[in-house]
Amino acid sequence: VQLARAVLERGREVLLTGSDADRLATELGLATEPPEYFVTDYRVRQLAGLADRTRMELDHDTAEGPGGPPDDDVEEGQTVGAVALDAHGHLAAATSTGGMTNAEVGRVGDSPIVGAGTWASDETCAVSATGAGEYFIRSAFAHDVHARLAWAGVSLDTATRQALDEVVRLGGHGGCVAIDHAGNVATPFTTLAMPRAYQLLSGERRVCVLEPMPGARQ
Ligand code: ASP
Image 1 (cartoon, rainbow, N blue to C red):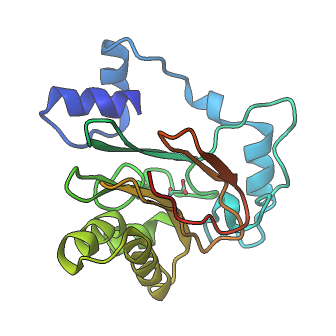
Image 2 (tube, protein in one colour):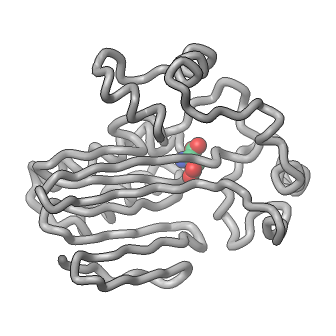
């Protein structure tokens, strides 16, 4: 996310991948890790636990994911999406992904693709998605939420649900966290679980894992 922010601030490219993105991170003095860092016992177990080795699978397809729960003493990085509305009315979104189990080398998921897994526009909303990325790319999910707010004038709750319906219609599944310019929050999902939380300026906080999260106004 820090590197994505640096690319945003440079204002030249929108998307950098592979070794050139690594090089830029090093040039900018950002923390990096070698590929071995990402090969953990938990991730190896996840891959081994995958019943169908011709498919990719999402961590939260089951509450614990293939391979069982993470090791207690190891902090495993998984998908994290964040959206925010600041006091000046600016909206922001960031998506950091744990990826899919058994993904092809070179695969690019939806998370870094603006309009698919991530979107923020001060006029409408900020969206960060999680799920089987190919379907979120095919349906331009995050932009679809924005467009429904901008052109159909529906609520954030309706816009996120309708956009997620389209992902499901294409054969995908997943969810998102989203906030609109008025501070409404929506977190629909079609997976078994999606841990999520919000905090409002009033100090109200809510954390949910399995159950639906009621919409909230600021
Ligand atoms: N959307 C991600 C991908 O397809 C997976 C996730 O982080 O939910 O790579």
